[in-house]
Image (cartoon, rainbow over all chains, first blue to last red; front, side, top):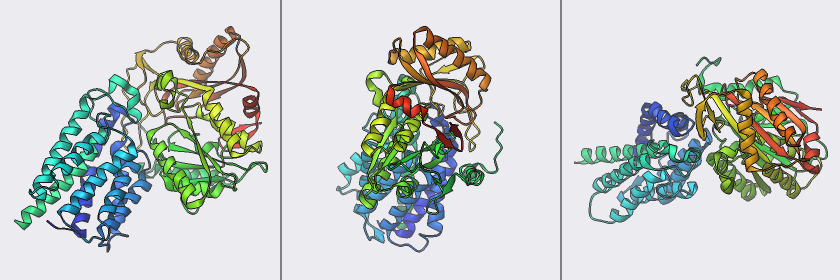
Length: 218
Length: 334
């Protein structure tokens, strides 16, 4: 499969739409264990990305430059803890696809492995801490295990996103160990982590792009 | 909840615009970043720059404490969200006089990452020495043996005040940081929430609480505290807060302290003074004398109802910092 810069931008625009439609849900999740603004933060960040895509990046065809610019724009718009986490993801991902105008299967896999690992490093969180790492880590593990295999990207990515979804759901039964919600102790049990949820939205939106492109090709 | 705003997405920008317009004799906004504000008034003895910052919604925290005797500059984040590294770095470049810059902020995951990234850039790209001191005064947020995990709440005011004074004394960066860290180590706070606030963008209450309930140990972004219970009298609440603070750091007869009773946004001064009254009685009964007291809205959470009590144990040096005059738009001490 080949993903062009234009399609990469389509993905980002789909994320913007996704974030807008799930904004209230993310805030509702965050009110249970945090300060209730995760949806707003994601929206502020991706609205800034939309501006960026419409203007500075309108003619950009280098996927890594797009990813770097998206990361920086998101970070500057939101700060917060989400800003450095997702920005690091986009920057580390960009490193894997330097100067590429078209991404092949291995580029996509390398991008997302670096993205997930970048978030984990920046946040210094581990699996089980009830953070977005609970979504990213099993996703990255699945990509690493199956990424070199014979299956097509669509199958590999779908399996990895299934692991991400399981990871997201697993945060419900966890006690938070990072961020503001970690002060809650046992009271954080039962609530799904908002960061793990927005991370899943980022991934499932990319899966939708891959499936859409696969269908068109088929 | 009702809000006097134009559009929820513009609240931070419009607040900053109004603030700089109202206090143009004190403040300037850097042309390089609209979230970067610096003082126009600096003590001539000061060598080390003092930078504060954090989310907005805590006014007078944090921009209200930029001025003579306190901070040289502030980076302003979105509501209850850390500023990004860019405005922090721009303030750093602007206030550095060649002797380094002290970063003062509360211990929150977002602030730690963003201020950390800005400090790295200041070092690598600008060759400015930056040191960080984090506020960890909230005794309700983690047990004593995990003090480094505690969040910063109203006690940050004392850290800003002590550090600003140390900078005005002409101290070098090492000594400024020693004072900042001592101020934090000697400062403990605990709060109580009565009513939630709401973010302008959602209008939803930040936490749920019954009409007859209070939340002990509430964080100043509406993070749940350690227990929810029936609302009690001001005296009982003051006793509970003081008791937990003293359990964490025992004080003995003859000790001198500074006390802050801080309103969270919508609690009247009347109630704050009623709480203060009992705090002073309790401390005096133990033979502890109050060297200086502060009562009012110092670090708020939008229109949240409730208050916090902060006690800083003083030595001779911290007494000097407490006495040091301050002239800021939202806080003046002669």
